Length: 426
Image 1 (spheres, rainbow, N blue to C red):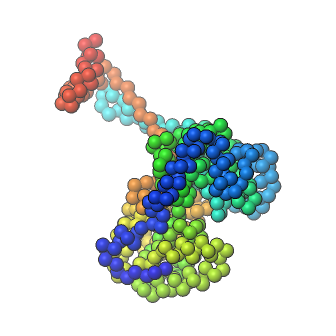
Image 2 (image 1 turned 60 degrees about the vertical axis):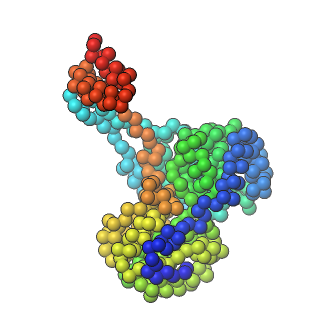
């Protein structure tokens, strides 16, 4: 990683750029895919599978025999890990369930708020270069805890086998997801947004993905379908001082760099010696990784930034707004309390980002590309709408009548005022 020392604030915006930001070629390609799926449904999905991945698709929905075969292939160790991780994820998300509330705002005026699960949700599970069955747990468990009645899951097949990862299918079945469709990329997002003969139209789409998936979500979000957030190529920032362990920091950076060539990792530290030590560890550890090619491409777009001031480190971290933020510093909570933009924060030397990716209980579907300044990561509220209710007695309406009429007439909305006046004549 290239090292920058005390960069001027005028450089910060450039240093915070993501590798896949606003690619017009990707956008044009995604727009074409969306149009084809909208027009031709399943036929387009099969054609795109052939064109993009070289795979002939006879059916799009996973069959019961495929679920059964997958269960037989998954090792006992992985099944046990899924069960243990699911227990923690379920416990954390169940604790978030909101309760109905009732407030009497004034005499005779009663207001309620009631949580209601989203009716139809679509889950996108990446599977191109790594079958992320952990993401099945992160999306399916809160959907079920929230009480969503209809859940469909889309995930690509392996180019090598032409099948969905057995771990993805086992995790889906474990979580109670019966409908899984063998569709990936931007076309999966379009299929869930518009609906096809095989894939039902959903109300909201969840899940991370590459720049094609993210672009499709952004193009269709709030136009054809709601989306959870922009959740694109993975990223991590590590804040480190002299109390950090360079081998730990390097391992955390590499754990995100191995996601893909368009991932990005950032080191923000208090002196050059830390940056040099971490860089040396990154080089050493990369040599033994199976996905070293992805790592090297991601590292070429990554940076180490040295600041003399901890205050500048904090400001830079908030400017970047990382998906994952690891604070390997003395008194990490003191730093964390100053962070206003991050998807998920990991504190201390023994809180690796991979704990959140798999089994601690927090959700790993998080906003990327700086969107943590405006979005939360996936949580129970992501799968719930909150409907408000109100009931006024005649006395209650009378007590508010002058306030309502005065405001309505000041806005020039006479019918609003009349809706109150006509009631008070009875």
